[in-house]
Length: 337
Image 1 (cartoon, rainbow, N blue to C red):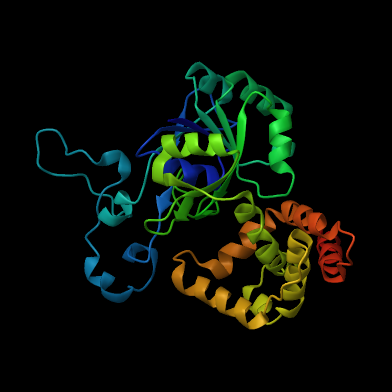
Image 2 (tube, rainbow, N blue to C red):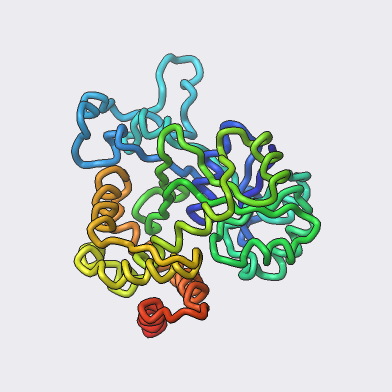
């Protein structure tokens, strides 16, 4: 399939890197330049010894001498030598993909496109971007937002396109400019042998996308993409309230656990307990299995999406049942804005 990712943020660049081996993919940005440029998002793994100051298990033996940059993988003409860049290893190059970033005019000229994946909520798109999407007129439009009502907004905004939800099944982060070479700011982690997105929407649309994209996506009921945020977003909110301090979150799990129970009840109509001990165990499992430093990543990542966090909390609090803990979290987040 021919796939456009909207927005040159971490989710779009990582998603494009995961799709690029099997599909014709580009990232389109409203700040794109006349000439397409490239980014080199890199997949990180516990098996990659270049991702840590120490080795994991027997991976230390896999460390190799400095290798190649993605741009210089060919041998030098007339020799058997390969160029060497001592900032890169063979492992690191193998985990890196080249992703093209272009602008909307160029994307329109390069059409047609089968699928556009939005990294921005449909209600937050500027008028120029929305107009460009309508002009390209893809067969399918996927939103990555899991906020209640956003799928309906997308269907209203783009009535001639089949809209679905793509819930990312990977983590991505953008490092601060200047800390790594330009174009290599994004790294991501995707579980081995797992789908890259969970897709939910109208049955016929979902089946067509699964046929086109194969194992990159897996179909799930709509509730499977809308329910999980009710459990974990109150913990995200608490993390933001505590200034992104992961250690502070782990010692203050009572309020987000109660808020999660209220959110789940708002969604299901049934109150289910969310246990602090279980929540702490989940946080510790994340620390152990995710090669990205989750204790630092989570605070930075969700701080950039505090508006979306607030909208989710407000949606669950807009119920006939009292939601005092959700209301308290909403007030605390608003006080930080």
